[in-house]
Length: 291
Image (tube, rainbow, N blue to C red; front, side, top):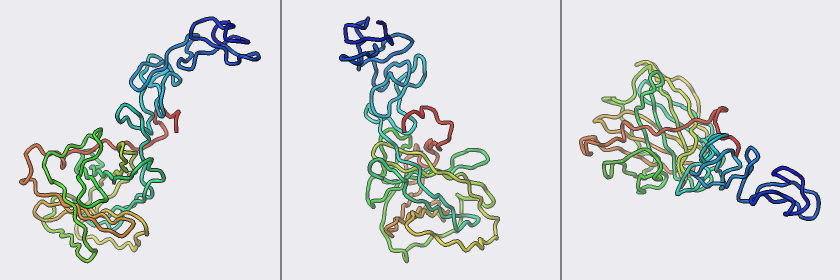
Protein backbone atom coordinates (compact mmCIF):
# COMPACT_ATOMS: atom_id res chain seq x y z
CA UNK A 1 0.00 0.00 0.00
CA UNK A 2 1.00 3.61 -0.44
CA UNK A 3 1.48 6.08 2.39
CA UNK A 4 -1.63 6.04 4.59
CA UNK A 5 -2.88 2.69 3.33
CA UNK A 6 -3.38 -0.53 5.29
CA UNK A 7 -0.58 -3.04 5.87
CA UNK A 8 0.33 -6.11 7.90
CA UNK A 9 4.13 -5.99 7.74
CA UNK A 10 6.94 -3.81 6.45
CA UNK A 11 6.73 -5.41 3.02
CA UNK A 12 3.15 -4.27 2.67
CA UNK A 13 4.08 -0.63 2.04
CA UNK A 14 5.36 1.04 -1.12
CA UNK A 15 8.35 3.38 -0.90
CA UNK A 16 11.79 3.18 0.71
CA UNK A 17 10.80 5.74 3.37
CA UNK A 18 7.44 4.12 4.15
CA UNK A 19 7.01 1.44 6.84
CA UNK A 20 4.11 -0.39 8.48
CA UNK A 21 3.37 0.81 12.00
CA UNK A 22 2.30 -2.69 13.10
CA UNK A 23 4.25 -5.78 12.05
CA UNK A 24 1.98 -8.34 13.77
CA UNK A 25 -1.53 -7.22 12.84
CA UNK A 26 -3.32 -4.77 10.58
CA UNK A 27 -1.65 -1.37 10.58
CA UNK A 28 -1.08 1.73 8.49
CA UNK A 29 1.71 2.65 6.11
CA UNK A 30 3.56 5.61 7.58
CA UNK A 31 6.85 7.44 7.15
CA UNK A 32 9.99 6.11 8.81
CA UNK A 33 10.87 7.69 12.17
CA UNK A 34 13.36 10.14 10.63
CA UNK A 35 10.78 11.30 8.07
CA UNK A 36 7.33 12.92 8.18
CA UNK A 37 4.31 12.90 5.91
CA UNK A 38 3.18 15.88 3.86
CA UNK A 39 0.73 15.78 0.95
CA UNK A 40 1.23 12.07 0.39
CA UNK A 41 5.05 12.16 0.46
CA UNK A 42 7.72 11.51 3.10
CA UNK A 43 10.17 14.31 3.84
CA UNK A 44 13.29 14.08 5.98
CA UNK A 45 12.95 15.82 9.34
CA UNK A 46 15.20 18.83 9.90
CA UNK A 47 16.98 20.37 12.88
CA UNK A 48 16.85 24.03 13.92
CA UNK A 49 17.36 26.20 10.84
CA UNK A 50 16.50 23.48 8.34
CA UNK A 51 13.60 23.39 5.82
CA UNK A 52 10.17 22.03 6.77
CA UNK A 53 6.63 21.69 5.42
CA UNK A 54 4.72 21.44 8.72
CA UNK A 55 5.31 21.16 12.48
CA UNK A 56 6.04 17.43 12.20
CA UNK A 57 9.07 18.24 10.07
CA UNK A 58 11.32 19.54 12.83
CA UNK A 59 13.51 17.69 15.33
CA UNK A 60 14.24 18.91 18.83
CA UNK A 61 12.48 20.15 21.94
CA UNK A 62 10.79 23.48 21.28
CA UNK A 63 11.49 23.41 17.53
CA UNK A 64 8.54 24.12 15.20
CA UNK A 65 8.04 24.96 11.53
CA UNK A 66 7.59 28.65 10.74
CA UNK A 67 5.04 27.92 8.01
CA UNK A 68 2.73 25.16 6.82
CA UNK A 69 4.48 25.29 3.44
CA UNK A 70 8.15 25.87 2.60
CA UNK A 71 8.98 26.96 6.13
CA UNK A 72 12.06 26.88 8.36
CA UNK A 73 12.55 25.09 11.67
CA UNK A 74 12.59 27.78 14.35
CA UNK A 75 12.21 27.97 18.11
CA UNK A 76 8.70 28.06 19.52
CA UNK A 77 7.71 31.50 20.83
CA UNK A 78 8.32 30.38 24.43
CA UNK A 79 11.85 29.21 23.57
CA UNK A 80 15.04 30.93 22.49
CA UNK A 81 17.82 29.82 20.18
CA UNK A 82 21.10 29.28 22.00
CA UNK A 83 24.08 27.35 20.59
CA UNK A 84 21.97 25.69 17.86
CA UNK A 85 19.32 24.45 20.29
CA UNK A 86 16.01 25.79 21.60
CA UNK A 87 15.72 26.45 25.32
CA UNK A 88 12.72 27.50 27.38
CA UNK A 89 12.71 31.17 28.35
CA UNK A 90 11.50 32.39 31.76
CA UNK A 91 7.86 33.25 32.29
CA UNK A 92 6.99 36.91 32.76
CA UNK A 93 7.50 38.29 36.28
CA UNK A 94 4.36 38.16 38.41
CA UNK A 95 2.34 40.96 40.00
CA UNK A 96 4.17 43.91 38.48
CA UNK A 97 3.19 47.01 40.48
CA UNK A 98 4.15 50.68 40.62
CA UNK A 99 4.01 52.51 43.96
CA UNK A 100 5.27 55.78 45.44
CA UNK A 101 4.72 57.75 42.24
CA UNK A 102 5.88 61.37 42.34
CA UNK A 103 6.52 63.92 39.61
CA UNK A 104 10.07 62.65 39.17
CA UNK A 105 10.27 59.06 40.41
CA UNK A 106 8.40 55.86 41.09
CA UNK A 107 8.96 52.44 42.64
CA UNK A 108 8.53 49.20 40.71
CA UNK A 109 7.66 45.95 42.49
CA UNK A 110 7.53 42.48 41.03
CA UNK A 111 7.54 38.80 41.98
CA UNK A 112 9.70 36.00 40.65
CA UNK A 113 8.20 34.26 37.57
CA UNK A 114 6.31 31.01 38.08
CA UNK A 115 8.87 29.17 35.96
CA UNK A 116 12.44 30.25 35.24
CA UNK A 117 13.52 27.08 33.38
CA UNK A 118 17.08 27.39 34.61
CA UNK A 119 19.04 29.83 36.75
CA UNK A 120 17.51 33.24 37.39
CA UNK A 121 20.36 35.61 36.54
CA UNK A 122 18.36 38.78 37.04
CA UNK A 123 16.02 41.06 35.13
CA UNK A 124 16.03 43.45 32.20
CA UNK A 125 14.01 46.65 32.61
CA UNK A 126 13.09 49.15 29.89
CA UNK A 127 11.39 52.53 30.25
CA UNK A 128 9.67 53.97 27.18
CA UNK A 129 7.62 57.08 26.51
CA UNK A 130 4.12 55.68 26.05
CA UNK A 131 2.92 58.33 23.60
CA UNK A 132 5.85 58.09 21.17
CA UNK A 133 7.36 54.67 21.84
CA UNK A 134 10.80 56.28 22.17
CA UNK A 135 13.03 54.30 24.46
CA UNK A 136 14.51 56.26 27.33
CA UNK A 137 16.44 53.75 29.40
CA UNK A 138 17.47 50.12 29.44
CA UNK A 139 18.77 48.55 32.65
CA UNK A 140 20.37 45.24 33.51
CA UNK A 141 19.64 44.12 37.06
CA UNK A 142 21.78 41.36 38.55
CA UNK A 143 21.50 39.80 41.97
CA UNK A 144 25.16 39.20 42.81
CA UNK A 145 27.23 42.26 43.73
CA UNK A 146 30.43 42.46 41.72
CA UNK A 147 29.20 40.28 38.87
CA UNK A 148 29.94 41.37 35.33
CA UNK A 149 26.95 43.07 33.70
CA UNK A 150 26.86 40.85 30.63
CA UNK A 151 23.85 38.78 29.63
CA UNK A 152 23.89 35.86 27.16
CA UNK A 153 25.27 36.63 23.70
CA UNK A 154 21.93 36.68 21.90
CA UNK A 155 20.78 39.84 23.68
CA UNK A 156 20.87 43.08 21.75
CA UNK A 157 22.12 45.45 24.46
CA UNK A 158 25.74 46.52 24.04
CA UNK A 159 28.01 47.76 26.81
CA UNK A 160 30.94 49.61 25.29
CA UNK A 161 32.23 51.46 28.35
CA UNK A 162 34.17 49.30 30.78
CA UNK A 163 32.89 49.30 34.36
CA UNK A 164 29.86 51.34 33.35
CA UNK A 165 27.83 49.47 35.95
CA UNK A 166 29.12 48.97 39.47
CA UNK A 167 27.49 46.98 42.25
CA UNK A 168 27.59 47.68 45.95
CA UNK A 169 25.80 46.02 48.86
CA UNK A 170 24.58 48.51 51.44
CA UNK A 171 22.24 48.68 54.38
CA UNK A 172 18.81 50.25 54.05
CA UNK A 173 19.89 53.19 56.23
CA UNK A 174 22.64 54.10 53.74
CA UNK A 175 20.27 54.70 50.84
CA UNK A 176 19.74 58.33 49.86
CA UNK A 177 18.12 59.27 46.55
CA UNK A 178 18.61 62.93 45.69
CA UNK A 179 16.00 64.52 43.43
CA UNK A 180 17.74 67.75 42.54
CA UNK A 181 18.66 68.77 38.99
CA UNK A 182 16.34 66.11 37.60
CA UNK A 183 16.99 65.23 33.98
CA UNK A 184 15.43 61.81 33.40
CA UNK A 185 11.79 61.53 34.53
CA UNK A 186 9.38 64.35 33.69
CA UNK A 187 6.20 65.41 35.49
CA UNK A 188 2.76 64.49 34.10
CA UNK A 189 4.26 61.97 31.68
CA UNK A 190 3.12 58.45 30.83
CA UNK A 191 5.90 55.86 30.86
CA UNK A 192 5.65 52.30 29.58
CA UNK A 193 7.47 49.91 31.92
CA UNK A 194 8.54 46.43 30.82
CA UNK A 195 10.43 43.94 32.99
CA UNK A 196 11.62 40.49 31.89
CA UNK A 197 13.51 37.76 33.73
CA UNK A 198 16.77 36.37 32.36
CA UNK A 199 18.10 32.82 32.62
CA UNK A 200 21.32 31.35 31.25
CA UNK A 201 19.78 31.04 27.79
CA UNK A 202 18.29 34.48 27.31
CA UNK A 203 15.48 36.91 28.07
CA UNK A 204 11.93 35.75 28.76
CA UNK A 205 8.60 37.42 28.20
CA UNK A 206 8.02 40.78 29.85
CA UNK A 207 5.40 41.97 32.26
CA UNK A 208 4.35 45.51 31.39
CA UNK A 209 2.26 48.44 32.58
CA UNK A 210 1.94 52.20 32.16
CA UNK A 211 2.65 54.70 34.92
CA UNK A 212 1.93 58.44 34.88
CA UNK A 213 4.11 60.75 36.93
CA UNK A 214 2.38 63.46 38.95
CA UNK A 215 2.20 67.17 38.24
CA UNK A 216 4.94 69.25 39.82
CA UNK A 217 3.93 69.99 43.40
CA UNK A 218 1.35 67.20 43.63
CA UNK A 219 1.71 64.67 46.42
CA UNK A 220 1.00 60.96 46.23
CA UNK A 221 -1.48 60.50 49.07
CA UNK A 222 -1.90 56.76 48.53
CA UNK A 223 -1.28 54.57 51.55
CA UNK A 224 -0.32 51.39 49.73
CA UNK A 225 2.13 49.23 51.64
CA UNK A 226 4.77 47.26 49.79
CA UNK A 227 3.96 43.52 49.66
CA UNK A 228 6.46 41.18 51.22
CA UNK A 229 8.76 38.83 49.28
CA UNK A 230 8.85 41.05 46.23
CA UNK A 231 11.76 42.61 44.36
CA UNK A 232 11.69 46.40 44.57
CA UNK A 233 13.26 48.68 41.97
CA UNK A 234 13.38 52.41 42.63
CA UNK A 235 13.84 54.61 39.57
CA UNK A 236 14.71 58.25 40.18
CA UNK A 237 16.60 61.17 38.72
CA UNK A 238 19.58 62.52 40.59
CA UNK A 239 21.94 65.42 40.28
CA UNK A 240 25.04 65.59 38.11
CA UNK A 241 23.69 63.28 35.44
CA UNK A 242 24.20 60.16 37.54
CA UNK A 243 21.46 57.55 37.77
CA UNK A 244 20.90 55.25 40.72
CA UNK A 245 18.92 52.04 40.54
CA UNK A 246 18.10 50.36 43.86
CA UNK A 247 16.96 46.75 43.96
CA UNK A 248 15.59 45.12 47.11
CA UNK A 249 15.66 41.35 46.82
CA UNK A 250 13.21 39.00 48.50
CA UNK A 251 15.91 38.09 51.00
CA UNK A 252 16.19 41.72 52.07
CA UNK A 253 19.51 42.46 50.35
CA UNK A 254 19.65 45.92 48.82
CA UNK A 255 21.89 46.47 45.81
CA UNK A 256 22.69 49.86 44.35
CA UNK A 257 23.47 49.89 40.64
CA UNK A 258 25.08 53.19 39.78
CA UNK A 259 25.86 54.42 36.28
CA UNK A 260 28.92 56.61 35.91
CA UNK A 261 28.73 59.94 34.13
CA UNK A 262 28.66 59.82 30.36
CA UNK A 263 31.89 61.83 30.19
CA UNK A 264 33.72 58.89 31.74
CA UNK A 265 32.59 56.57 28.96
CA UNK A 266 33.57 56.22 25.35
CA UNK A 267 31.55 58.23 22.85
CA UNK A 268 29.91 55.14 21.36
CA UNK A 269 28.29 54.03 24.63
CA UNK A 270 24.74 52.89 23.90
CA UNK A 271 23.51 51.83 27.32
CA UNK A 272 21.43 54.99 27.75
CA UNK A 273 19.81 54.92 24.32
CA UNK A 274 19.29 51.20 23.72
CA UNK A 275 16.19 49.33 24.80
CA UNK A 276 16.02 45.61 24.29
CA UNK A 277 13.08 44.23 22.38
CA UNK A 278 11.12 42.73 25.28
CA UNK A 279 8.08 40.93 23.85
CA UNK A 280 4.89 40.92 25.86
CA UNK A 281 2.98 37.66 25.48
CA UNK A 282 -0.40 37.94 23.75
CA UNK A 283 -3.05 35.49 22.61
CA UNK A 284 -1.97 36.08 19.02
CA UNK A 285 1.55 34.70 19.38
CA UNK A 286 2.44 32.32 16.59
CA UNK A 287 4.06 28.91 16.88
CA UNK A 288 1.78 28.16 19.83
CA UNK A 289 1.91 24.42 19.32
CA UNK A 290 4.36 23.64 22.10
CA UNK A 291 4.06 24.70 25.73
